[in-house]
Image 1 (cartoon, helix red, strand yellow):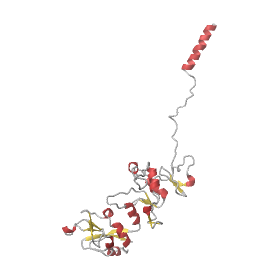
Image 2 (tube, one colour; image 1 turned 90 degrees about the vertical axis):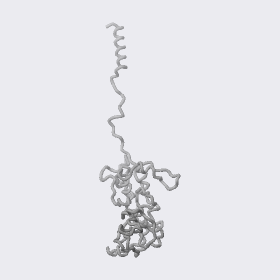
Image 3 (tube, helix red, strand yellow; image 1 turned 135 degrees about the vertical axis):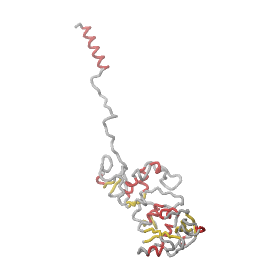
Length: 272
């Protein structure tokens, strides 16, 4: 091969090296790699931690790299929680229970203000809502230093037409049997028939329309009245002018009593 022919051959090889490189130096980053697991966690507890995936674990077992609880046990655990009042004994299990998508919906919690002032911001995520809502607040204490109940970590979205806070009412009624009495009976008689006593200071909690509607039919609506037998429901066979089927509450709480009764009503009674 002549010198000019050999030079032309080398030039062709060099050109092919540009057009068809023998080695691929770039690595695809969009396939073949799992997304790194990473969690946000609560920081309030001394021994337990809840992560934003709904897991609860002890602080020592938290994975140092991901800040997540190990994938074991039950997610969204409601251990030690009262699902009726949506209140729990433990802050961490309150957060875990609250994170369950069937209980707390993002579209609802993002409308909830973090604090009471009108200028306060709203929660951005369900974890923000649950970890904030489950902390103690002024509504869960009495006399500023004692709790209504051991179930004082609550996450419920509370709102109703009459303004009664149903979550706090249910919390304060823990340990109380709420009984619908027989026609004409006083609460003293209703509770005594069960071997219990009427708890006078709980009557005001029951003296609210939305609370009564949880235990009574209230077919004829809920009306303000003035009688020692309230809160109560008028029996359906009562005279028409007594609003048969209606629930009655009193606006004068000093009239609330355990011994009041009326021949045409059934009382709602707190027994213990």
